Amino acid sequence: MARQRTTLEGTVTRAGAPIGGAYVQLRDPNGDFTGELRTMEDGAFRFYMEPGRWTVVVMAGGGARLEREVELASGDAAVLELPLD
Image (tube, rainbow, N blue to C red; front, side):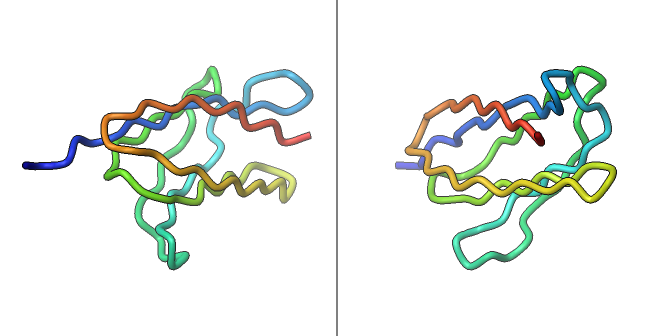
């Protein structure tokens, strides 16, 4: 039986305002780069991935950086708020 993919979505903000164009990376448990995208104008992003433990890395202008670990089971959908304050 195939494992269901999981969905990870969120919003990147600074001082409560959304950040469009921030880079959001997905890294596997070994820290290896898996994928990257840029946030929409409203700070939103969405990844579809395999279940497991992942690290989300956010980078924005001015050297702002944030890392957050997430663990998702098969079929999970997770929503993150990632403030760069």
